Image (cartoon, rainbow, N blue to C red; front, top):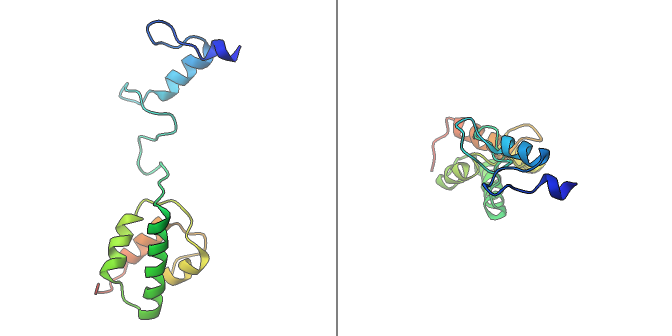
Length: 119
């Protein structure tokens, strides 16, 4: 039954109720097809920065806590994690001055909102 629900007709259209439903879900508002799970609204889609960038960002936050200065490096890293929806480690939340459980995005935006001169 599942095999039949996922088959296609000769013209590429869905064959079966599940195939038809998947085709409907995959169409965006403009009628084009996009991958399932991909949001056309960038505010709603989850993004992940690579681990090295996240680690570098956390290291720059430690330096911010020690020195109290937003460096050019930290400013650059804020741009790299600007849309990262991963949760920031607790110690890094403290370093950035954001609530526990904040995302990298929230920390980056809080840092950029500060009126601290970049060095």
